[in-house]
Image (cartoon, rainbow, N blue to C red):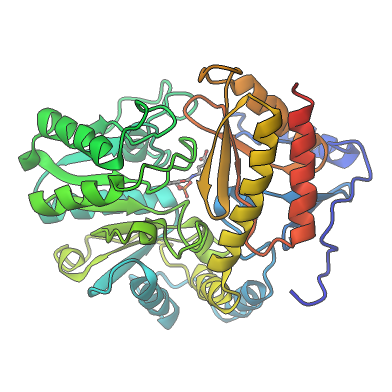
Length: 444
Ligand code: PLZ
């Protein structure tokens, strides 16, 4: 980044939240449905790179990227320029009415970069949940089967079908049922909590046995999986798990769908998390980081599967909006030009080293895991594996009070996760990790 408008450093000038944020929060409470919550009520005015400036003039370090979205950084120059120019040309026609090149170009980019060198087609949507819904529609249409297999700790969205696919009751599902039928949940490979020494192949055999017994091969349309689970706790399956599940799917005519909405686009040090073990999904869902902050999602799949759906069977008013499409083209180009996959690997090494040092001083850090710039620590009561969600809450809150945005996740709410923008400068990352280390020291 040449000469940033916003200095890439943390600078706290009021108490947090400051007076303007407090005013806005009072207005919010009167106007916004409380079901939509915020992690910390600092109202943002502008951002650049890995820094957000709030309405009171505090410069915050963003180690969450708006949940893995602004991987190219806030206000990435190429994205800003593309969005401004496209908004001035035309902002909407509806691709189903009057098509435009930008949509086609995004599909070409997705087909070229997603795992596997087979012929592919893509379709564009607005949100991750919508992409997952459509992947399931396609899988059912192609296979003529209905069963959808998902995993413990999975997160796939908040719409009716995707709520059914999501594992955690609170806050996602509680009292929002009935849920879509024909959804089956099987065991995930979770090395920290699986029987000691369980291999990826053994965990896959456990899942396959559950599928065969509970669903039956003839009824299974697809297996849907996050190659590294996001909201469920940054759970990285044991090596060999994903290839074995994918291989079982291939042998049984069950579609293997990778949900790379959180892991995709350089976050894990590869373009996609499946690339790490050379797993090639039949369908892949993407969103979040693809468009550098604009809403856009996609399903990309084998041409013969995608071509099976009848003309007019997929779509939506806004899917593949041209402003979002040019943002995607700009952010993908930025990832390529700046080699953000390599940047993610470097960030992951720095975070891993710091986390290991923190763990040596704090027995409450039960597990450190992740890949690339998707790193987490699982907090437990010292000497046990009993989840400690209160510690996660306290540490996240302490970081926020010091101007560092971190997030928690996990089925037990006890995982602290970092998803920094991949363009974060080393000094800024160092400062943010220092704040986190202090918050963790204060625990003991
Ligand atoms: N699949 C793997 O991570 C979104 C959800 C935040 P949407 N994760 C953040 C929240 O509490 O709502 C996600 C994901 C994976 C699907 C989704 C859903 O994507 O764009 O939020 O619909």
